[in-house]
Length: 376
Image 1 (tube, rainbow, N blue to C red):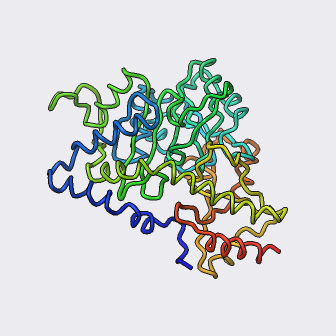
Image 2: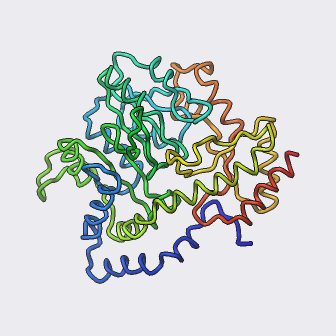
Image 3: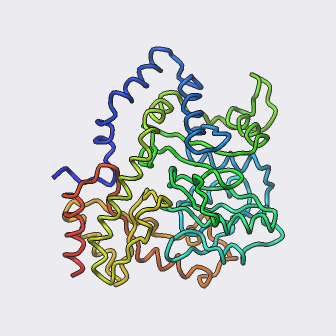
């Protein structure tokens, strides 16, 4: 059996080595390391794939979120609602811009932001909602957009974990996540479903004026060299990373299908025990691309199980062990523990098993046998 890894990028690379190496060599041959032709080609390819008018590449996913908020001209003190159960980058950029993060609980079944939580959190100072498509599952965008339209709020999709997922609206129409809100941000960190071999990110929007603003922000506020029209940052996707992403993008749907198949096999094996709560999703659907495969263990023995798995050299992780409202940097007297019953429970129960495009049946059986061996 191949060595188990949370993410097997080496085996994935070996299958597309010729394409990736050719793209990197093109950058080396042309010496176009920043803002070169491959950046523009990847941008155009991704716009077509997502069905979105504008993709603005940048240096990483955290920058993408920050630049998206900068482009909306949010002011210090404006309130931005987002989920308590997610990675810190989502709330980090809100705080960096001196906006006021408003954390709300999540839904137990999907682990995505609670619609009722959003409704209760809205005040006269609320200006935006940041839904996170957590672990690769599309959030309830129909409900979120309805709330936003009713209260004249921006929707900033955090799409760092779900690129390629489709959202099916109430009319049965499919749209790629990241192309629904006013603006979206994604990450191309190597472990993402579409990852480069360094850091990278992008912002998506269908708003022409916002796209123009964002393109200036990522490049020191310049549209013309040495003419700084807006306050900007230095955040550009380099040409080598764009070349890697351009090579991988045509494989993204196949990668996501492989992840869903692995998740289905995990579910079939692990659903036999009542203490294991596996993710529920439509086997024939595509609203979940399984950036992570996250399970709940409800018998109070989650940490002991992880120790057991690690003793067998099975990688595993907890996403996320501490909710954002309990983090020192984001603690606030406004929050009460009673506001976050589901997030607090998830932090005690969730764990993630290896999930990537190269998982095979032998590996999945070894992993699931080890889990059941401990529980049963």
